[in-house]
Image (cartoon, rainbow, N blue to C red; front, top):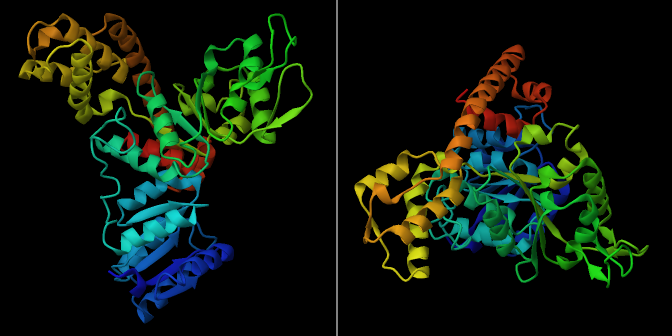
Length: 451
């Protein structure tokens, strides 16, 4: 429809948000109606038809379901409204916002937002290009980068989440097993952010010794220690204005965590051998292969640092849980190595496809990549068969041990969750509190175990 003829309803209990959005839209659309109390939605919809509704996901109202936004979204549909609904959410509720898309929401916006992005989303929705499902149906060759591929629903959800959080400055924690592509996701977030023209600096902090940690991250002055022959800026300064990606953050010591937390809180670094603070402006992305439950152990990781780096978390699934992506990625790597080794791009016969789909890939995408490189080097045929695909015996041995451990831990976790939920008569908020989880984290586990 014509945006100028649109009538929009904004529902948010934050007066500042209502005022700001109304001022932004008043010259763009026909009418803007604001409402603080979601319990007035029914009477508003009875009086007037709206083309678009902006709905907050969190309210201080008499309704307390733990996911008020989805509750009121369902009510809007029950009241007979067919208006497009854009959910307004904070960083920490992004997983819940993604879930709202399956409950008939059209899109969601993360606050605080850039006005230009909000206007673009509203205009796209009103023109009929933002219907449910389209936004998350990112294609195999996504704008997120030529290397970050996937056609599985899990990867489409990640692509959509990246597109939403990239334009913000939210700190991101990427979780996933080794070899799942956490570094590619970090790079995609940077390249789709407003900092894309500035530096993207990656540091494997887990590999830094105690003596190198401060010098590498914060820099040093000449003569500050043996071997410091000149002044040197650290990685924080190098990333100023851009993005700093700290990989394997779960492997740093408590002492290193304390130093890192101080810098993040003060937004300043002090080089070794200097007393002069240097202001920094970075977007921080961290990654680890540790499960979030291990990071929550304060004997291993500071809780205040977890909150600082984990404004939004992205869970990257293992390749064995992304079966729809295996052949797509195999062909992608085959094409890359065919060009590298000056060979024709190979085909895959049925035995090769079957072998790929049946293998659990304990080494994830990285193992698949190396498998395809070996196949391209050794094969003398233009069609790859199962005999050409030789998987790593090292990864297989590690996988067998890990699988037995995972099955045992999963059983314990599932049974614990069931007992606590039953104890609280199905109240998710209370159960999450006793388990030491956020509601969002508990919902993910409920989905994982089909509870």
